[in-house]
Length: 386
Image 1 (cartoon, rainbow, N blue to C red):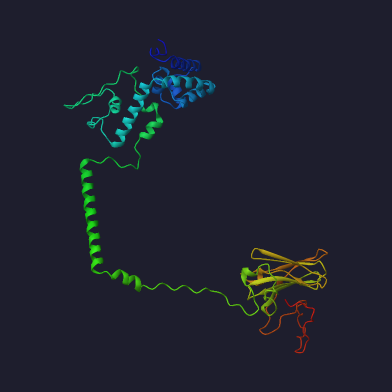
Image 2: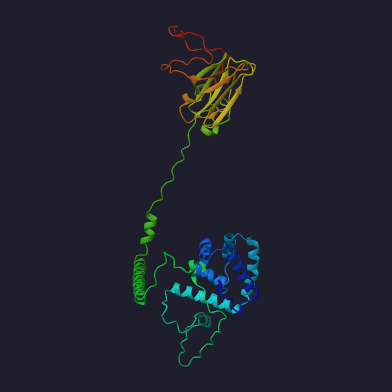
């Protein structure tokens, strides 16, 4: 008994040649139709229709067959395109197939039963799509002409068009079709709700007409909240900036140095003295280097900003300001001499209340050293006081 059935007589030559090529590839590979279905993902029933010329396979099925049989897919898809054009020329079959699928999807979406009577106003399209069903002819109406007999009697199944079947499947979130009684109850509920809303609106309008000044008085009597005053900081005389507004600026020019500055940390880099100067008024800090050789440097980093100063001939210099939002004792300045000696500042121990802080270049007094007398001379004029 031959493996394949004879191809239909009315099949187009291009389609006939393509179906024969598919059969030869399957025979050469030694695969059965069931094994071909497992290898390609298309059902056995679909492949029987494809290989017997009753249905043109989709392009993805052709590519899957080429991969399963070890054939170059480009040559096979070229033959498929020719067969597809010939198949499309059969307008009647294409029309009937698409209309039948459209009717099935529409019925599934509307929740119609298979044995439910169709609407009386039925178009010619739906009459053609309902295969094998006789159109009900009402008295006084003209029966629509029937569709000519199709050349092939096999109708496509959902397995032949998996993408259409997925589109026609009802969504999980879609509500079930409502019965006429349920729709009637729902419409009655909506009418009652609309009536209640109308009564409420009429009552509100009547209240406003009888009390015209009520709404206006309430709006007028409600005082507006007063705008909060701007928290603008009052700076001492001579101080010209504070916080981020001082970043990168000269502490002396902005009035942040002198009496407004303290020294929270100090250290040495060789013979040079490195200090951190902090202004509580300006919330800024800067590094100061003194007793240094020309070219010695001091660097300060804080708040994401850094500044560097280089000593000149007088052996002193100070950096621009950086903003300090935390503890100034944790801000450190480091110095580097020309000879490559490095050193950083360390927090200065707190002095008793009222006691003067050590001068810029003076080292801390050793334990047991006598305290300076009341008449001790002040620092020389050359010592920086910034």
